[in-house]
Length: 263
Ligand code: IPE
Ligand code: IPE
Ligand code: MG
Image (tube, rainbow, N blue to C red; front, side, top):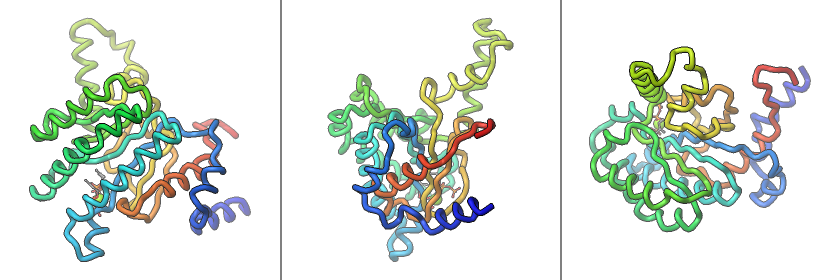
């Protein structure tokens, strides 16, 4: 009881909030790093509106956060970073906003690709890529090709991604194999399903970060999040920087993961 009150107070007052980046780094235990961090890059629109600016201004500012987070993820040796950039539901937004988001993606990939290659980052787009506009598909194809042989950080960009759609596609692929007698229904277990997701072969996320104060999953990595630790913050994505990622990692390393078992 006392422990949970202490935990609550520590969490709600943001224990790491006033600690410098250098100190946070020294607090990190390299042997307990998450292998896979997933981020819902949320809050761009509200961040801009609060400044009396159009939503597009927030999306552009959000790209700076992405740049910083990809760099630090690579520096600290994460194996996989997955960012939610555009959901299957985001098509409900006005055409102009969708265009801004697609243009920013293309611009980002174009500007960053050399540095990503230099840093040995392997770029993967996950989602229904074939439904993206042609210029976005091209940018993704170039990024895939240029970073194909990179062996460092795997950087998944979730684009036209939906967790439910991902499961639908996996079920379709598995059913097709059953119909062709390549797979027996008895062989369909959790591993077979994982192997038919966009993230096949990658570890599930250890840590999910959602900025901007909303507490929901928004159709992100539904299967893969089964035992993921959540770190939620009111910091808006355009303000999110490496210090916030380090805060999340330090907090993650304090947690006890039980996976349904006992301490
Ligand atoms: C995240 O910011 C970017 C995308 C969803 C593509 P939002 O655009 O959702 O910003 P808010 O949540 O409206 O503030
Ligand atoms: C989730 O954010 C999708 C991305 C960040 C790309 P949304 O802003 O679309 O989520 P909801 O609508 O608030 O659930
Ligand atoms: Mg949002």
